[in-house]
Image (cartoon, rainbow, N blue to C red; front, side, top):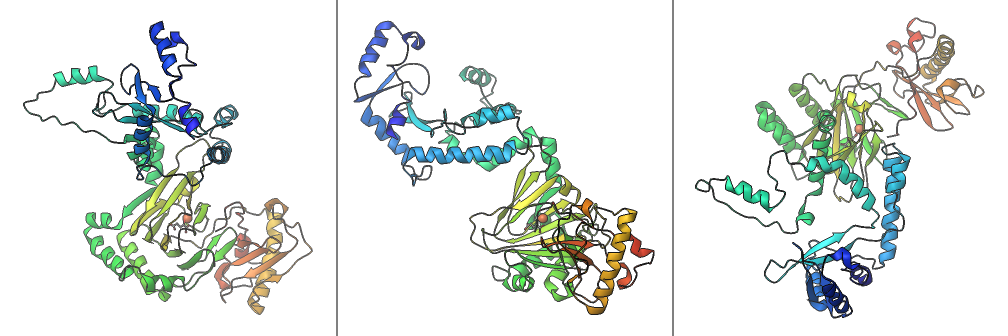
Length: 528
Ligand SMILES: O=C(O)CCC(=O)C(=O)O
Ligand SMILES: [Fe+2]
């Protein structure tokens, strides 16, 4: 470590005299001095000149700086070469997967940014000769690190945001003096603040947010418009009526710190062991790979009340379903997806109420050339709204993190039973499907069988739908209404729901209505 750090000191031995702009004799003297291992030769933090320090003083001062455990941490692995290899591999992977593959940069840019033979960053100190005790200014040199080229690339992009729009920045002391001249000191008091450890104190997430806002204001705002985060109490303070209702709700949820009863009640209907979900509503929630049958709201008075309150205060939104998701701890999340299922009404709004642990919701633009990704921290009591339309532009996820406590989200949607088919069958295909549907119906309605293989030999019945299968099975809704039938691709365990059938009457193979039967395929969307 030490060799790397010291290698970036002023290297008189290798520096050409004409580059240093000092008299020849002085240069020769410095060169001679640099052979003395007891001293270090530095330039001052401000202005020009040469500073000669005892090496031991220099090291002590630097050790004082890095000994501040609020800012620096001793690396667990002391093998700097292993560390730099790990960082390089990570940067390479990140570049490939998140930057190059989505098409955010060209091949040439990728080659330029790709780190090769990098080393870790190096810190050295420059003495502040104008201050008492000559403290050191620590400088972290990123030259040659794995992120160096990437940093330069990003710096060019964010450079325009550095231009102050309020005239609050100064370029140099001349500008400062000239501005002072114009000030009327009779009216003002001048105070001076010294910012300590500026860079290590910069709040990163906020800075990124400010830069993104300045750079991509319109698009970024567009994203945020479709995803408004309201704190419950913020809404409460602006809408009087909402105030008491939501407060009551919160009280109910959090009577004893955490709404255990409520949560337990919701998740007692666990549908999936890795992601604990309970779906309440009127109509089934049909998504790629499956279908949630609704639990009636009447079975959960708490949720009924939540929904009722939302209906009162947001009458236009007409929520009629609630998906309760339990994240036991930070190890449980939800992968990137869009809530763009056809059963969610077009033009409707989705709303997520967050309870418990604060977690991040990440938004990723689906548009390859756009950089408008964003993150939203959802704390207890936050209510987030997204438009249905925004689902076509963004994917969202709740990534895993290191939180220990439980989070529960309640996502409200307006679900419709009129599923618009993604793939409509042509007449010919339709005819085939109709036959399928009728067989299904008779089987489903008479025997109440849940999963009946009806035509295992017709392997490529719907080749244009890209269904790879060895056999097709048919599943009817477990309830007696048989309101939704599902074509099941048994070999891949994928379920393709067929549109709602009419009037709970399962025997309508030849009626006009049954012609509307179509297949809903959305196999590309991530499974939930
Ligand atoms: O837990 C959340 O806040 C998001 C849940 C979600 O995205 C979903 O249920 O579709
Ligand atoms: Fe979602």
